[in-house]
Length: 288
Image 1: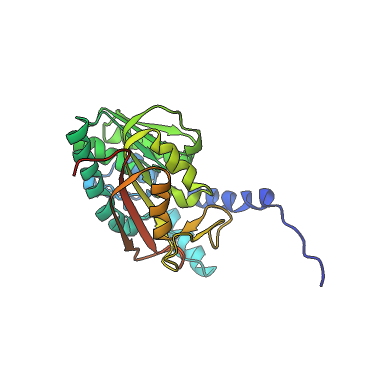
Image 2: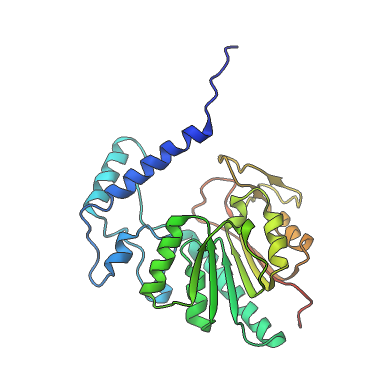
């Protein structure tokens, strides 16, 4: 059999990144924001999260710019899917039914056992929606969002200006490099499946926080608590694991699982990513 050429991923990966950057720039041409929209928010689309719960529109699918219209016309000709500025709003509807009540429960438990919550950490925060939700609902004085993607950090800092929430601070950093400073409540939102060593991050959070609300995309193809694959199927990075592995991972790190659950995403990216798993965990025995 003939030898196959080896393609260096370090050379290959910048190509789609460059194309995405060009596509992103073209969509800025001919803006048509809805009436009453902060133009900065419109220009910063797409937003991963739907901010309607905080009184702000971030879904601009019905208000495409002229550039966005042209890009989608070209994608249609090339047989590619439509570019949307909606982010992950459909799947967020599933996550919010899990995460928001779990955060409410975490704040309630903390007040019962330790008093008021003074610090909140949002890891893998993307644009920081859940940090802003906590700031709006609980007026927590110190909220830190840790996110590796620079573009999402820029969006988050813009949102802090728009929503007038200076207490929500963003750090552009790998979660593995977080310092050892303690926090009252931590949120580990979604990013565990983007890395190859989720156990290490969960264990690190165990040394930092009193309560943890964790979430991950999980595979429903297996119920084996040992099911773990890396890289994730169809990807060159990350991992996938079962809901049972997710729960066992929390316990291995020393977390006590107070509540947990599992749901199905309506629009998963593939068959290995259709589960939405969450857990509310305590670092020590909580009061029933």
